[in-house]
Image (cartoon, rainbow, N blue to C red; front, side, top):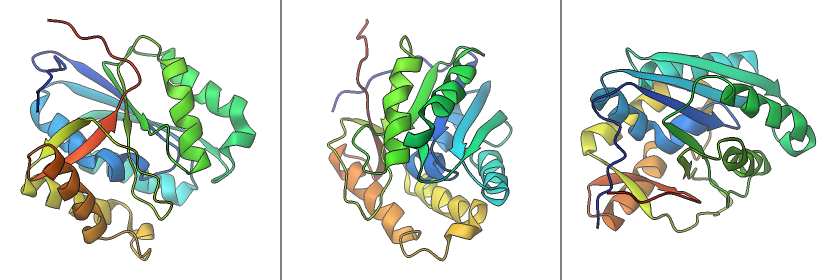
Length: 215
């Protein structure tokens, strides 16, 4: 397993995280957010969420504060209809492009291109077309569709970081707790599997369409 350094330490870092729905970002890469908040001394972030009711977006604001404590985080949402994003292609593209016209990010997090959910998949397809000259990492979200691909980039997590992620998910998103998939075993099970793949206790996994190798 070869480690790659993204060069994010020792300087200010701006993160853009894209989600079709509130909680997508934290479910997929909450541990990565916690690690960034711990290790990057000057981190700012923008969460861009395409759909969401006022209640769900309030949960997203709480989630951003919990997962990136002490960091400046802006949340933008178009409040488009859940499950209907392909019918709002122009509005979704403009939401992302409006974000791209702002501060240049050091890292973009987006859903997987192989995600079976139509809302996730549209965000995934648009992200690399909007941020053409940036590193876009595509995350995975566990769901009943069984749509996982084979990731090849991992962020290692300790058991403490994984348990903190799960606890914060439940604290930030109480509206989702009654769902049968929203539990510690699902989140920890996937993280343990990805950890096994990269010889770590736990991990979150990503893919990317393009990257430049330098040394």
